[in-house]
Amino acid sequence: MLDGHIRLYNCANPRSDAHFDETNMYGYQMIEELRKKSNNTFELKAGTLYPLLHILEQKKMLTSYEETADNTRVRKYYSITKTGRKYLQEKKEEWKIYTATVNDLLGSASFGTA
Image 1 (cartoon, rainbow, N blue to C red):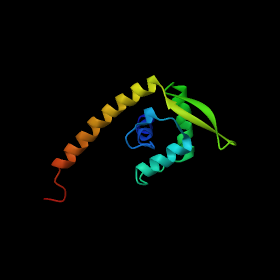
Image 2: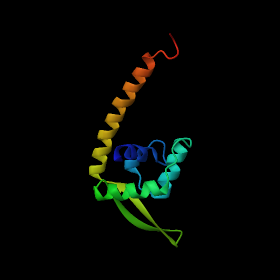
Image 3: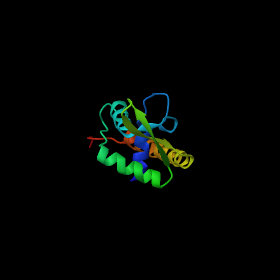
Image 4: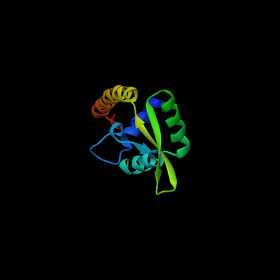
């Protein structure tokens, strides 16, 4: 369950040349960036994201801190830990293998021919 969500977080990045592991973000920002970067393909709901962020914190893959925004609102920012970075890198490698395999299979498949 966490594997797919960690990959999603990597996409949720405000800078196209950066990765999640280089950018601290608050939850709603992750949701919006994921939506934008995926051209509305992924629409993660807060009710899904926040429990996952808490689990990732408990597993020491993320840390969080609070910061006041607009002199009124307190936002909780998340940053990936060394453990989280290592896990993310492992999952990225797995994802590369998986997507290469699927692409090979689809590239060699002949659909609709008899």
